[in-house]
Amino acid sequence: MVTIMRNHRRKKTSRKNHHIITWVIFLEFVVLIVGLVIVLFPRQDSELDALLEQDVSIDYIEDDGQGEQLYVPRPDIDEQLLTVNEYSRPGEKTKAINYVVIHYLANPQTTAQQNHDYFESLKDLKDTYMSANYVVGLEGEIIRCVPDGEIAYASNEMNNQSISIENCHKDTTGKFTQATYEALVKLTAYLTEKYGLDRDHIIRHYDVTGKDCPKYYVENEDKWEEFKDDVMNYREECREKYQVTEAETQLDQLAAYLESMAEQDAETEGRQ
Ligand SMILES: [Zn+2]
Image (cartoon, rainbow, N blue to C red; front, side):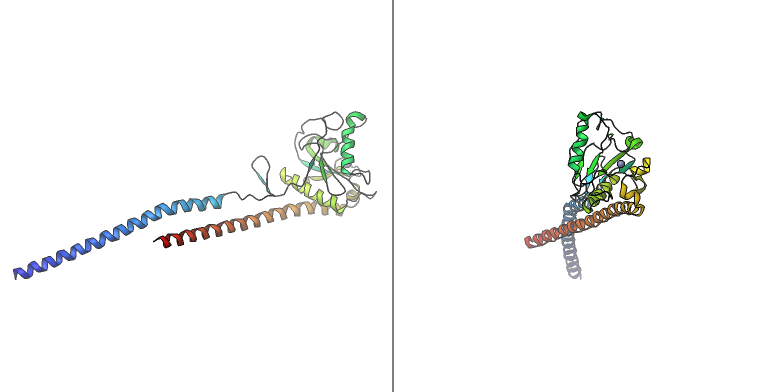
């Protein structure tokens, strides 16, 4: 009887040992897994977070200098600033930028360059005060004569709080060519986006003084409304295009990330 009891106890002890070994192996396995999770996952998660939070840089997105993103691309602008002079570029700051004022040059067939050069020549001619911040040419070229936020002589009492855009045209109707029109839409969209101006802050010289300028868009009110619509629609299109591109870029990056993780997993498994 005693022998039987002893045998029984021995059996019990060996079963207990077996249990302990199983537990140790199991714990080692748990420690290994936890270790792997700690080593691998926090890094991956922060990588993923960084990826999702990062600013997607797309060529046509510009920083406005105050850290704000502009959705409207900056059109090609030929920077030919006038010499600071009393007659066309006084070099004084405007008190604000509240309006974009649209003009026509009233001398058919002249180019943007010719008009720029005329503004520049006023410092020597000394007979008239005239200029604009921008001139848009017959081929859609854009010349900047006076920096934004600096006074140009175009829009009378609005000079102190606006950006003025002069436009070339082909004949006495004053209608802009398609190229001029498109460049003007893009430039106006860019400037109104940049300075946070809405549709009502796009005005004509006519709205300031009653002058017949820009002629075609004073005489055809519907075309003027259409122009402002085109500007606002273009801004909206740019915004939508940006959002779609941003989403696509993020999806591409996420897909690439997941693919690289899958490759890493495959490598790790291969090693085991
Ligand atoms: Zn005008």
